[in-house]
Length: 262
Image (cartoon, rainbow, N blue to C red; front, side):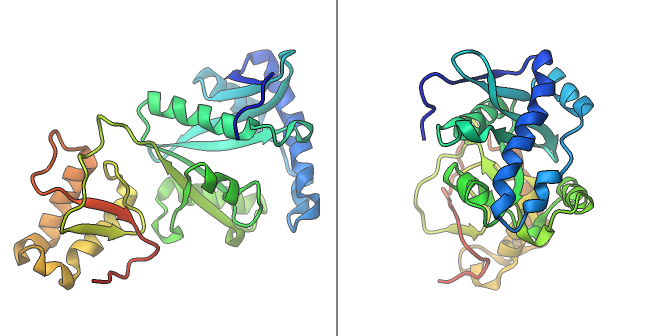
């Protein structure tokens, strides 16, 4: 949904930060008719944290034609990704494209700063949570593949009383033409649930090594290339980005599970 006329997104100002907790509390009331009604009484983000993120340029606000703040987004870094810590829109200004515009602004800033992934944690089954972010290009991350920083996110959520089983970490990969491979269809496919058209990141290591070790792939390459040592070197090459397009062009695509079918 395009941002409705009369609203725009910009960086927050210091004097506006106290207003954000009021919007957060107002937006939390949307959970009253869900299994998570307890969120209405949840603590707001500490003001000192918000002030700290403002200093790094990671607080944005949505304002109306009178420059009144009606929504905001706050981000921080987690394991090399830009993590969307909090995003809220005043309910009376909902369904006007403000949430999508805030997410888009965060993604644009992340790309400008050199991030390859924007991440977040949200509820799986609430329409304005995971289903909303899916429409914006975010994809669930396997809980078994969470790195240290995201495991800490889970511990923080658990401490706050959130039902972890109902939560999901999601990633949005920011494609950058200068870092992308020259991709076309070929005889070889790398097929996992996570690989996209981008340089690999640490979270891709385990599924990539699993794929390389699958004996069904020996018809595509020799036993030396199936060794863990070779697979690790290849992963590090992909993770660092290739200076030129590879000689053997590979089609990278997403798959819902690791079971490879030929």
